[in-house]
Image (cartoon, rainbow, N blue to C red; front, side, top):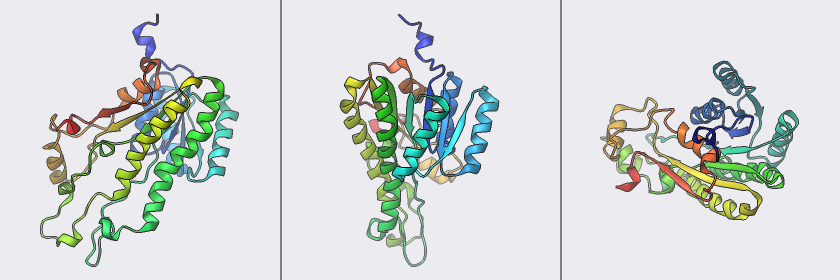
Length: 276
């Protein structure tokens, strides 16, 4: 029987993190690096990916690396997978983190965030990154894991995969009703679909040693307006948003042997918001 501390160790395991240079992607990579893993960041921005990789190497002394790829492209994902395997010879963990997070927009003529006005081009772009990208990466890296007989896929969903957005959070005093900003429809659709993809792949590869889980985090405090933070905090039993690094423990748990008997699960970490 393993020592409990050893259950969380992922020494030498290669973890591919899409959107790895982003706000939460870097936090996921830090959790992997701190536990002895080797984070490989897949991102579309070389500038940000290079900076994030260097920071990981400096802080944790790991052989972190990055691959520049557009995960909405089948060929780009295939090339990225080939490159990871060429460098490291293995792929143990895939964290499907990349996503568009369309901003709420308000003009004097229209508001694209509202369902009635939501552009089909934005719909297609958001789904391409957040859902199709997860599918393509899971196909490529997951197939390798299944053939190897071991691996972990973690899909980063959201509390809005479990509940609907509370559009009252975004209301602006004095703005006409038809211009009131709302959380765009694609965010909920993509995050809900990721939970469905999690369940599908968990059963599909259960006999191949590949575990597939999701995490549904709540909102992260990151410089949002005070009024928004106050409104959202009142909807959370713990009365606050998450801090930036507060999901690292959950991510490590689901990526390590500490969760060896979990697959197909959606771990909700939201300060209790979805309980109310």
